[in-house]
Length: 443
Ligand code: C2E
Ligand code: MG
Ligand code: MG
Image (cartoon, rainbow, N blue to C red; front, side):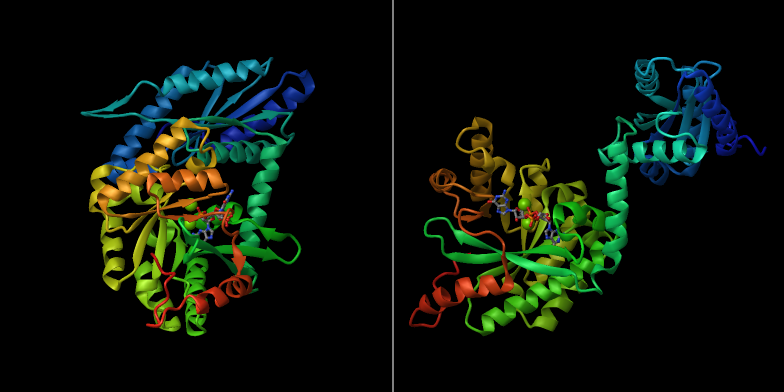
């Protein structure tokens, strides 16, 4: 009992670690390497939740049999816990052989799993650690196989990853970032920059996108592309996101009060803020603390997130719209929108992803996509903004499509709050017409 998993009857982690220790010693002595392969079923949690735990258990038993049958008798197949299995192979000879074994495991999962009257297709993420190359202790080999399999998962699953030194440093970097991110708010290491959004015809200011910056005292500025995904995974994005909302609203209101008409304020919202936080309350808080009018606030939510859970998104987005807040779909074109959802979603704007603007006018496919998005927006009555506009050619091309708004280095880089203020305060005052309304709020 101490050595076997009761559900699948496979050896358990303890037994595996005893055998691994022997395998490492053997590999060092003989010079013939061994391999530990972690096998983690993709999205098993979803199956467990939707089909129920007893169905989940049954599938795990089927997986155990399938794995066991696909390996040779003297390879060790173990269940670590939950949906995590491992295969230990000794005397692999050539590293090329490990690839063959990896493929055998993948092939074993190609055929569907049938339990009573339901069928399931499962895929796996595999993480490979070689001994003694990747470690000479049980602990290291376990840890490195785990690092490798987590990397495979991060890439979306259904893939194998071999442990490397480089992978190790990326993982260490992530651990470092998460640890320091926990204190960044209270240590006041965040600042918000603002990138102007403009009308394409004349470059007049129509809004500003708040972009978060993390200035670490020793590391310097860490890019949001690096820390936002970590904040999302750890849930830290919820307090951080609240901070951004509140502070950006306060800044925008201060600008308005001093005569700078910035148009609207766009704030990025991450998926977990919608699913795990209370976004509606966060917005109400930010608006009441800042006294900013809700009609000036616009939230940018990525297309990938909205479409992943469109049914639930609709409800929340509708409540936000009821508050008077506008919605823009960020990174549009990258997230497989369903047209029927697009029609039903309470949104105001599509934001063409930078990747489709980058190679205009050389890339025909990008041109076609940009064109399609602009006309899609026009037909659905949505405004369209292009992001990442860097050249005159891109600007002219977008103008010729009838795209009205843009954001990008051609006009302005993201600016600090002070720079933004200095840059726009004068033109904002000058452009006021006799009625007292600014003429530069085309949005
Ligand atoms: P995004 O929302 O798509 O923001 C646009 C990114 O494009 C910004 O990068 C901006 O600096 C960059 N950019 C703007 N114009 C140009 C251009 O002409 N050329 C090029 N090459 N790049 C341009 P940044 O500031 O590094 O932000 C990256 C991403 O991080 C953002 O992508 C957004 O998804 C996320 N992010 C930033 N701040 C926040 C935040 O407060 N909350 C959340 N949830 N995400 C944020
Ligand atoms: Mg954005
Ligand atoms: Mg974007």
